[in-house]
Amino acid sequence: MAALDRIDVGDAVRAAGGAVAAGAVRWRDGSWIRRPAADRLVDALGEPLVVIERSVLLSVLADRLPAGTVRYGVDVESSSDLDSDVVIGADGIASRVATAVDGPLPRTYCGYTAWRGVADASFDPVLAGEVLGPRSQFGLVPLGEDRTYWFATQQLPERSFFDDELAHVKDLVAGWATPLPDLVAATAPQNLLRNDLHDRPTAGRWADGRTVLIGDAAHPMRPHLGQGGCQAIEDAVILAACIATGPDVDSACRTFERVRRGRVTAIVRESKLIGRVVNGRPAALAGAMIRASVLGPDLLVRRHLAQIAGRAAFERNLDRV
Image (tube, rainbow, N blue to C red; front, side, top):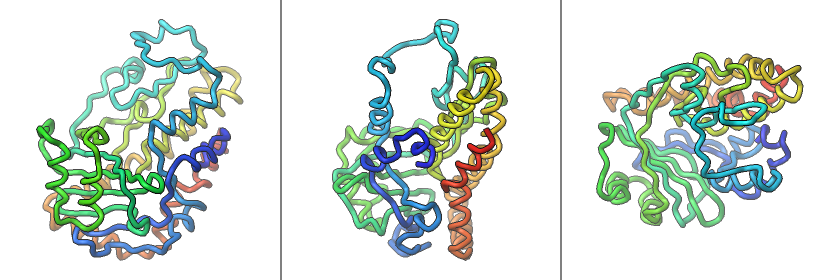
């Protein structure tokens, strides 16, 4: 949100999304792992987290651009096809641009798959956060007054797809704490996505002349801190600042990599660590490690959240431009 405020779209995003102020963590039977104060995230970050559908966010951003700026459905085989001042590779973990800059960047399966859904239902916002079970995980956050975004993960062999993915998730969460079964039941099949989760090394180089990588193209991260999209937004805003203040585009791209690499590397590393703990084997050991993490004082947790996702963390990074 600090980055979006920098480009004057923050309020539009807040108005279009839902808010999470606490961030609860429970076991699948509903018992609390960490029951934070109602405004825990506000205390840590200065405001609630904002949850917004990707398509809505893209519309908010595109609406601020002159008509015709964004072109959809265009295939680009090579950046040499483009008459451009700069080529920004924001094409994800399987980035063609990253391969052109760095050479092959092989992906590896993380050992678990994820379903993401939008339910036409609401729930008590006090419960927004995560619910953990053996070798599986569920998250739920409000998208507004009557819609909910949820995700579920499960350890499975790669590409073990089901004829009816929604029915499988219903079976997976049967008997879990409320409102998880109700949210899955209120999800239409067309509002469900299934993706095996893959990891990939951070690109060795993010910039090559007037070509530069941002987001997962540069630094893929597992989803366990909810920072993949957030760090891509920070990348974009800081890259724009580098271009606006640099002597030329080539040097601006190099400055961007220097400014961003340290902050992003730490978040990539922690996201991977959390994924290994939550999905660790054996399940009893993973559960013991999660319980041990709860012993830390909530003040320390809030301070750590601020270091990752607080407004000041972004602003300190921007100040390096």
